[in-house]
Image (cartoon, rainbow, N blue to C red):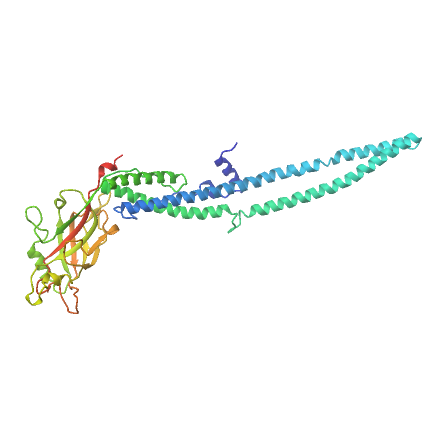
Length: 431
């Protein structure tokens, strides 16, 4: 009894089965570990899970087509082998040779008896009649034999034509062509899955310090199982980690003395000079956020917002109005460059800049200019930041107002950074 591989190999060698089924899918898949942002662990893992489901579904379809193709090839070979046997069996049942011999014997015996007396004449007539009967049967047998040959020839032509459909391009019976197309789709899924898996691996190492041995993704159908198992394990461990994590909000002022020892991220004179020295041009602010701002913890961002601060002053002629109230109509725009991040191999890189066009007054609730999700997910907030402030303010009327002019001759005094943070739980990521 041949095993499945040997059977396929024999059918391929006999030109009955397409060589694709010797090693379906896409062998030699090479991936690029830098294709996707490693800090977006959850997003990469969700997409990787979707790809695993798709790969399993495609593999199932390819395997089913392989079974159909092998069955079609073996059925055709079996037909070719048994049809000749069946034809010969049907012709043998006609017993032509025996009837030919019997006819010849009867005719010879009839001639021997002759017509000497009544008994011999009777026997001679009987034998002659039997010989004539056999002659008629042989005529019918010859006709039946010819018809049997014609019938089996027609059946063979039909089976050959039907089997040829498995070779016709675009035919639904061309299981190899259909499987190859699915294999091309599977290859693309495996390419992305391999890239996503490497990004997840790098993200787990960067954020949680966990090394999770990557499965070998060589494009074979068998490698999909290892990928699925690895993905499920990564999902389970990440789920355990997120269930034990808690997030908190922190507002970090730039100018207001807030650091330990009474210092600030940007000195008030430097902040005021940066605004005053660039009237009508973008205002560039650079500062370093030390880790002790986050109580010395290795925190990661979940969300980031920005607001501005100003002095409170009453305006006598406005009744209940004040500069603080007027400021609530002001909107500012800015570009924020986040600190350098480090890849799994320690190489520095930067995430895309953040853009805010609705920066408003600092107040008791979350700022209007706020972003979360992929733009800031898992960013390490400690390090060098840069903010480029648009020089013009947006005001409620048509008047032209520079940031350096301020509201009622009082320019902006501070920027407040709103951070939603969490502390990764590396302990639950260990095996």
